Amino acid sequence: MTDGPPDTPPVLDEILAHTRAEVERRKSIIPFAELEAMVAQAEPPRNFFRAVTRKNSNETAVIAEVKRQSPSAGLIRPEYAGDGFRPETVARGYADAGASAISCLTEEKFFGGHLSFIQRIKEAVRIPVIRKDFIIDTWQLWESRAAGADAVLLIAEALTEAMIVDMLILAQRLGMTVLLEVHSMDNLLRVRPHIGFPHPTYCLLGINNRDLTTMTTDLQHTLRLADLVEDTSVLVSESGIKTPDDLTKLRDVGVSIVLVGEHLMRQERPGDALRDLLG
Image (tube, rainbow, N blue to C red; front, top):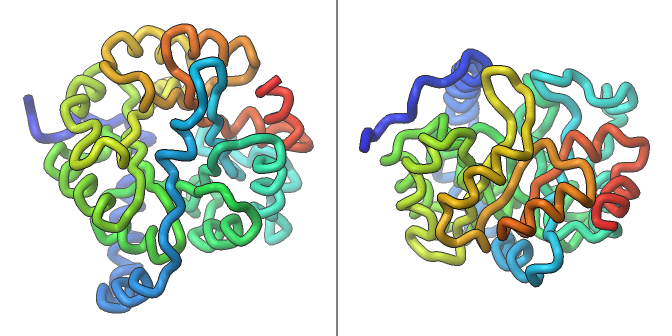
């Protein structure tokens, strides 16, 4: 088994190159000692893992995403442009509709997010919040916890196995859940041995249904790969989920956690769209 990630698609290469430069810039502004002090003073993280795994097999836990734009879709709705975007309002609608947790995009250039969105959301809702960004450096885990994140997304396609292991250890030390995401079967097989390390209640496995080459989504991707996952109770299906029937198909193969963003954010009232999805 090789240590490094496979060749990454061009769209991910571009984002990662920008992220590396951006992380170095932020490191030069905020000394590590300052981050440590901020983490020491932060409120304890909310238990993201427990929030999304406590449903029974006949229910689906939804991680509802606050997302303004994406490289494939551009700006999702015209009213999301500018300073008028209110992530806390969207999150409050999700929480009222039954979301188990919130996913918050914080990447600025390609997704229109901001790190400050996390705290704004946490002040508006009581459910846990995951930082969804391109984490390539352990410094970003400290930054995430200092910003109030209860969990972080790690993308297998962007990381070596050694980096993944280091980040899993540090995330547990910081009290944060990890959602370790894969897009391909090769990456699923590569990271599968590390799910539940260093402690089983701190790590979730995500299968993203978006093909990073074509940027299309296919729910069948999760349905095909679920058989390769020993413990489907920690499995999260991401992208391309739109209907209650989709949730039923996933539950039929043992998947009862989903992450839904773009479909909900396209609607005039994302919270009502989530209520419809949950039936």
